[in-house]
Amino acid sequence: MHRLSTRNENDLEPATLDSLEPVKAGGKVSDIYLQFANSEVALRAYLQMELALRAGSLSDLELEAIKLLVSEKNQCDYCLSVHDMKARKLGLDTGSRRSVRRAEPTGNTRIDAITAIANEFFSNPGPLRSELVEQGRDAGLGDQEFVDIGLAVATIFFTNVVNHINDTQVSLPPAPSVKD
Image 1: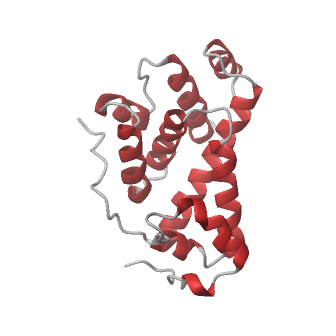
Image 2: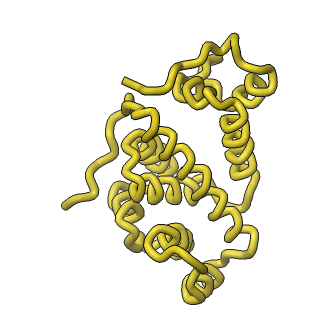
Image 3: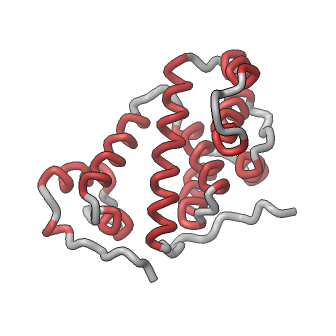
């Protein structure tokens, strides 16, 4: 049972309704967004950040890899199930999805650099180590990609935390275990 109330779509501000248009599925707003709408300002900010990510320098697959890693670090089962499914649909095989979640190499140089950078924010807070910057540069990451990685980490961290507050229940099949 979720802890946050599910807002009625008809009670939302016009700006919030406009922000929700791109995420409607079959003309309907998902309950999770209506629960996030308890702070319409926060929901709109999150949705704008997601739009910025989609227009940014990282591919959908790279974004899903970041979201998988961060959701694993934050133990957000809801986001893990969503982003595992999305990464699978984008072609990331089971072993690679498991490796991303374990912060281990996948064999894809660019995804490995991106997830190593994202993982560093959790394992070694503080300035990003120079060797990770070099690894990213060697994988073809430019300044925009580095900033977009930070934005991707921030957006998924936000949803992970709000899902923990809400105790959001997983409605999709759970992500496979990362344990052997």
